[in-house]
Length: 446
Image (cartoon, rainbow, N blue to C red; front, top):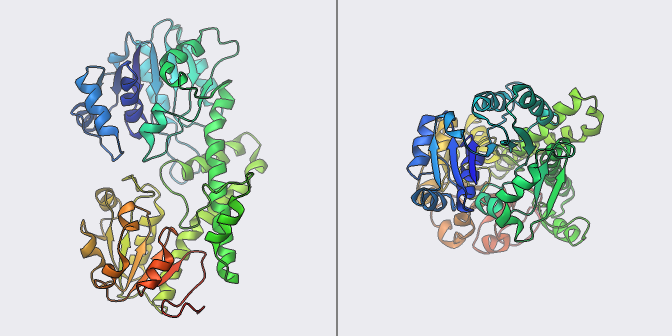
């Protein structure tokens, strides 16, 4: 099938390459000439495992191309809209300018029988409005909504082998949107992937509801971490214990710095804003506290570093390991790790930052921080080592070897991802959010 993907950012580039991998003839369209040039040459403009190989295969096979010319959409049957919906400046609401611009640019090239498919995360009610605009255009094109559920670092897998597919279609589906989407996803459906076919509004709510639930679960365990610190309990053991309850589950119960990135924070804020516009704001008031708890963890991490340094950050050398909001990504949008590094620097610490992939993007956002591509250089003579993103590189560090490189063997585990006993046995003073304070040498509460 001939497919258009409009918007070649994180979502669009992965989707375009994946659709080509499934055997479709795909053109990716974006107004960013530099981005298009990179993709056309087989280079991804961001780090995502598996994407470069996907681009290389599809480009070489002639099933995928990229352009800035919207007229390339003419003659294609399916047109995916995968542009960004960032948070508006100084507001919680989603900015839909890119969605509106994509539809406006696409309409002149639509033909009768075409299907426009929304993948962007939008406020509920957006799809219905776009469907009305398409009807007014008299192009004969129709609309479906097919939300994405990508996890950065696993986006290729999540596109080719998703845990579910959702189609939002108009009442009665007069244009046969389900049949067309079934053709697009034939290989995926043949694997037994669950499919939910519903109305526009429900399809729009699926993505934001899932994100709101995940954010709530993460903030819940971080709230418990605050309680654990007060009473001397261990939040990791607490999470293990309650995670055995099948109604709760262990996933997303890892206490630490909290969530960040380009989706969860802005999506739950946009959800709250849209609920307010619809007069349903009371239903989502709990999300305000979810957001507050999440942001509070960053401040607590700074406080914890100050505690282990006897109350003063001024002039102390701090090694920050991890800047991306999660491992296997170079995304630093709303990154708790990068935010903590910046706060420590502003309070007088000498911060040197390391990340396997996110240093270039971090430099763009906080050029005033010091960065290094060398892990050894980052930790050299450090007064404290902070692990703020759970990259495999950091989990594999030998604490005995590292102890010989630092000024003081003190580690703050911002993600509760290290083997605490192994670090303590190697002579380190180990601290983590939501866990008891123990002396490294004698194992006593301090």
